Length: 319
Length: 319
Image 1 (cartoon, each protein chain N blue to C red):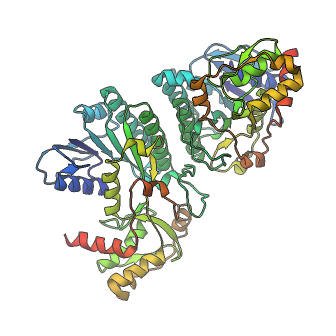
Image 2 (image 1 turned 120 degrees about the vertical axis):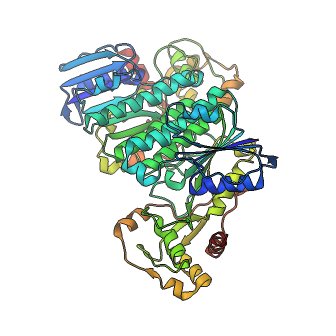
Image 3 (image 1 turned 90 degrees about the vertical axis):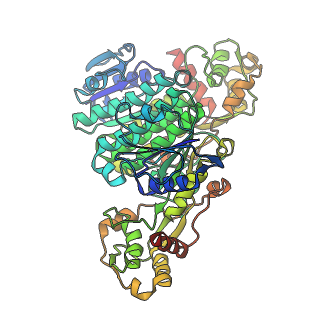
């Protein structure tokens, strides 16, 4: 089996590549070949089979046909211009997040085969106002260009799947927490910062009230979603290939309580509370909770507490 | 005021053009100029102001900038490859229904002004399974390429509106009934055929059971939706510019009862009943009823019975 990961240099893509390379199988079948692509060449994990790393821009002429030329059996597509950049640069966001994916679909259709394609979508397809708990059949009314590009891609994946051009699954990912790495300026960054930084003995600021509720998945859960999505029976998924992933609905207070249990009050005391009304205004337009009955029926499973999320983060960092 | 109608040769576009030309105002303001465009030059209605008719393909290079060059104040966009053709020719459907509209949005953005754009969308954005009565926040999961292209366009209109590039409204139209003209091969054609043909003393076949329920608007209601949409206060519409239009939920039996009241049992006896399982299968995947609270709040009004729909059809044909 030949596995292609587009966006293999990103947080989730790189971890997924390491998992598959280490395990050497997908859906119980041996992986003989992996192709890892990103805008700069991804790091190659240790792998017993054939492995190529490619630096390319999916939206550039010829890039998509090149990726599809050898007809990879399973394609994970996680490449994207991130939300803030897609908002800052309208044309770049559409060129990469919409036209790049259209080029990929056109290349697959031209190659006349039907691979499983697992696409990283996002709860950014949803826009306020919401019910307290968003059901599986709630409409997608994004409030960002990034969310629009994800929602449009989902519709295209459904139509190409219905036509038999591809066998796609789009995963609407919760906010990933605890994000590894350094604090970033994303509006959602504080959700990870207030755990990761104190766990490393460093200060972090909380810009919103402790009562703020949000929808989370750990990096390990996100990797498991992609891995599981590659194995799903098409008939069980049905014609709507966009699936709300399960997650953990938690408040900032829940996060801080778990931090206290894991690392004590000293760690909690590293959190400063300088309110940022601009961030609070953005965060208030984000989903807080979902009823993900459909994902559960399909065998996706969620994190159950911030205690396990923190424990997994500590274990990852001890590697 | 300069009004542009794209798709002014179609059933709704042509009637809308005649209404505006006759009345000479839109939203209480005088119309000084009308531009009517379609793939072949539309018929020019009598109009006291300046009127141009244009034959062009919106998806052709240069067509959209040409339409926008004189900055029309209100744009009605009804041009589309129809459902059956978009299904038969994948590339043509996307080129016209998606890329053509994108070219229009790009041209408006490049012209750096913010016209009201009223777009003809469709309940084809919805796909089974449905609740018995579809609410305003139900997800769009189209089961056709045409429905996909409409749903994608709605998302693009919302994002361009949010960005201030345009002030768009997308109207999700019910099935139009009674369609004027000759019987056609569309799967939905029989809904009009079984009324229009017997009213003209001609036979028509009913391929589905009398209990089949569907969602209708008369041609006059559809014109009124476009006319009203041009007048809406942007702040009242909110960020989601796609609106389920109100309609009449009725069974085939309701239609036939109204036909009997209007034209007697002799007219009803012109309906033959040769079942067509292929058509029944398609029709069973279509919406039957909607709760259109949002449209009602915004001042859109629906037909109240097939009696009035038939009376209006008879009156139209007497003109």
